[in-house]
Length: 348
Image (cartoon, rainbow, N blue to C red; front, side, top):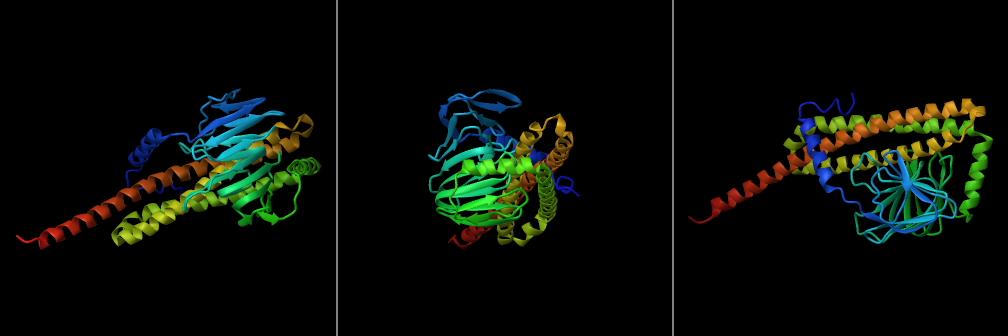
């Protein structure tokens, strides 16, 4: 049973509506365009227009740079992401109001992020990797076929995806291929050369890339099914956790936050992979109809998984709101109980 179907016994519709209302009034985009040169466009709601310094980018918007072009996005804390020539990125996630993490679909970005306080952090996504950042300078390349390479110049990065994770330090690199665990190496090479090699590799054997994408979508689909089950379990156990008291609720809330991050990471990975698949499909001519059909079928599976990811995220939002209200009620009862005890001890 899906997470949405599992939300019985509580007023899911009213809770989720409340979440949507809160999200709608809290949207505040935390980045601006700080530098722009050359041919840069953005696509929003299916419409493509030239990007200007005053453009207000929204979650789900795609920015594309042409030859000899450059665009820099700056966050309010001073961090920035430089989009290099002939690159394509997506801002945030259309299903997550106010989101502004960058997903590199193809090309290259250079990032420099300020040091975050404990518990803070930022992320950059590619079709194959989640790059968790704290006070870091790095360059990331994503080939047209979706493989990624991360070069760390300063600080630390954790690179993860559904197959595993790895931590890299200053002057280390990570290669992350479709349907593969992130790896590390210290070899220095130009990212432009790496992208050319990846392009030739894909041209020589696009069928194998299609097979790897198929395996990748299967893994994301399995993750989505597991997440759906967990969301339903937390929903079903709300009353039990509430009866166990404050400690049990705090533990459950922490676990739900971890699940929330995992669901969102998978949503971003799926979105970036979908963008890469669109580019691959568009590159096949009529002479390669069979290969094009193969990638179209993978894209259809990607869309199906994305729909389940979205429903998981919406269901978890409702569960989080229900837990928040239940926890506040426990805290209020505890506070009232303490006040009543104090009152009873006061001299009459």
